[in-house]
Length: 321
Image 1 (cartoon, helix red, strand yellow):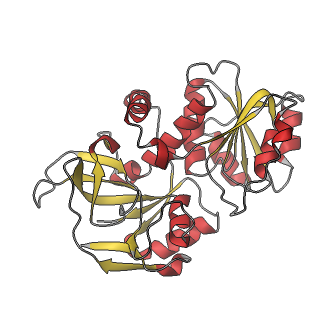
Image 2 (spheres, one colour; image 1 turned 90 degrees about the horizontal axis):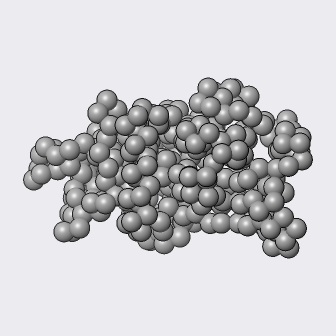
């Protein structure tokens, strides 16, 4: 079968379309004919060799997909979207049964491939912040608000009734996210976001920050929270090691929490609980993946380059078949 292979660790240039052996499910897995795959920052890190637990190359790229269950050699099963650690960007892939979810009836495969990582990550960020069932009067700062997780977090925050602040480098992107429900956009190229939060909240700060930048931004995000606020860290898009002197937490009773979907996805009760809530919102038509651009699998290096440059809005999707 055809697959996108990471031939060695490096940038987008290490990606090649190759013929690889067919995927074979274990009794706990299902085989899926893949139609589209969602590209995530974790895929960039995987190609570079910077993602925890990455096997040595060559390996098939991708962790998020949409397609149809296979029975024998025929795609006769249900339409599903799913999550796996590796090998999603191929004509066929396997995934654990509990990490496959039905695709909403009117959605395309591209929409479905843009859902799992972004919306589960955003949901768990609110859960970690203690805001899923106790959101009244809460404020949240969402970094990279125009990205995949950011646009998902805005949609969920709107449902929860949260006052949301978001950072981006582009006025155009901020305007588009406002249409999703963002109340306060902060262009960090024009204004220091910590100062903006201080002014916009009249010095009070926010209840939680969704932080995926790394470097100085972990400590800087702590400065944005009010008493007992929480910083939820789920990435390091700058490529810089997170910096935090824990003494700055003392005065506010603040805390920093890690979020790693790769780890949480192994917790079946937790994933099922999250899916129950997300599926209710899906059924009510309240969640819609935001897709910035779709690339054919043959142009995967260009898709990775676009994400690497941080120029994308919403989700980047690969069309597999």
